[in-house]
Length: 185
Image (cartoon, rainbow, N blue to C red; front, side, top):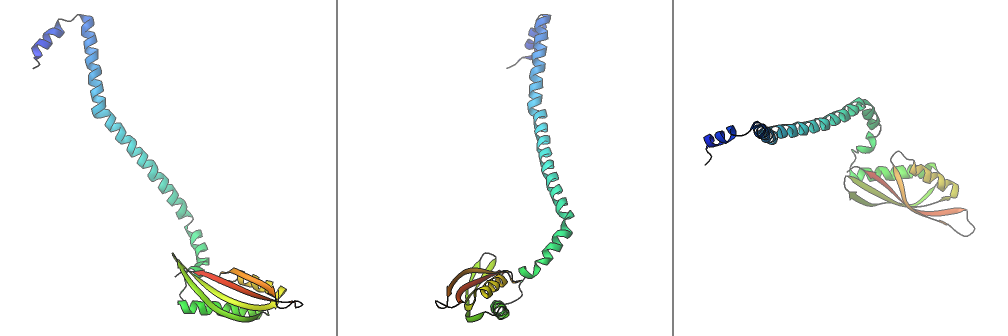
């Protein structure tokens, strides 16, 4: 067991230089213990809070930029609202697609041999409607029709097509085509 009186007597018997070294050593040990138990935990907590504050400030700055652009984003998104929200049922959607393709064909003097709906493929948050068609037309009329399909407001895409002459000497071409439209479910 430690006897404080004996330790006090031994310290009192030290020379002034030894007492100075002892006091400095005791002060150093005290400061190390104070650092490890009080100061370091406080500084590490402050650093963690500073880091969290910097992250929150960055998130706030990003959100402020988005809020500043809110009106612009809403104005642009309203342009595409008709493409994103389809209030039509699946059958109505297919019927509308068939009607628009038929109208494009009539407008461009393209003779539709066959026009029928294809598969409907569900993938994630969208549905892909396919239309199979066969047609006959002059090459220039066919090119105008294909351009009309690709630039339609209904966002049609020509997935696949095959063009061949109707006969050897004919200027009329036959075309088999698959047209698709991606729409929300």
